[in-house]
Image 1 (cartoon, rainbow, N blue to C red):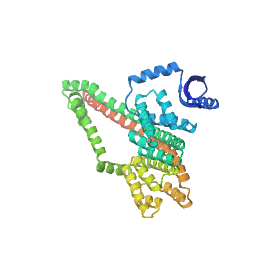
Image 2 (image 1 turned 120 degrees about the vertical axis):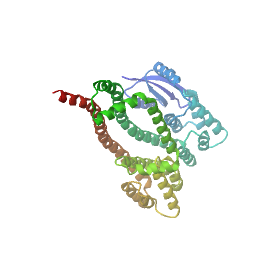
Image 3 (image 1 turned 90 degrees about the vertical axis):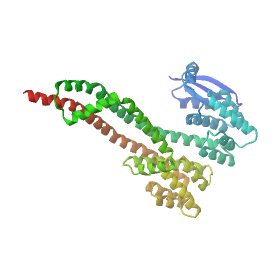
Image 4 (image 1 turned 45 degrees about the vertical axis):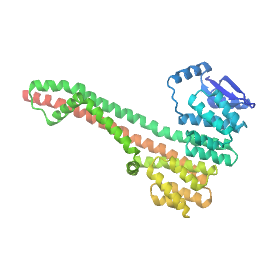
Length: 406
């Protein structure tokens, strides 16, 4: 049975460290809760193994607070607040048990701000490490008298967003590896194999077909001017990064990407899931619709769809329906907006936003599978054709010479 090491808090706020044999992490949480303990961190392996991992991580540690750090912090703080610990005590415990210097620095800043009388939402905002979405969720929880519930909703939101992001990223790993192998294989043939035959053809003094000459020239170019090719690729990457930081260029790119076959549909579904989950979470926590739309606009990756949300909020001020305004923009999936229109008319917008987010999470997974089913054979075909052309260009002169000898 797997062994887990854990850190937990007693109802009195004291720290307890131990180990437990259990079939899963969920079972460890269940057992600790049954003992009246508040689980803070649970890791697979013994405390000695966890300490060794901690030492190895320090070698590559950075001062940056990642989204994973914020998610872990939110989970721990939510558990302690829901168990009844005061905010100041919860922050103190997290500082004591923390093993990440960057996160501990943020926690200490939060604790100092809270002790000076500032609201927790304002304290989060001052650190500069938390998104506007996160800060407004906490402020809404403060106004409603339940920061713990707000943090619990944030944990759920961040976990779903992480799952959605992981689905897309993990799906792209295999095609990227396949494309890289294809490119490296072609370059290796041009640099190491083709020049061997080029010398032989020069010695024979034979007239070469045009395709063979082209491949030989490509091999010479890679062999002699590889530094220029690498420099050119670097310049292209820098140019792309510069263009992506330019608002006008980025907007044009985002607009065109929405029209790309398969890719545009995937982007639309990803953004719809993000929009629905973000807006639903904010509304559930009591953030007014107009303010929520402006916050959601900042969370969206596609500039065109984000601008549509911003314009919809302006139309909302004029008394127009949210879904009617978004439908007029023509960039969001019509089916999702018709579902939300029902929510507007029946007063169940929050529930339907949650349903739409779930539906489009599944739609994204389906679209990713379809995209992979298309990309993999296309990449393999391109690689096969390129290698066939290179090998054929080498064999063709040899076949011609054999025919002349006969």
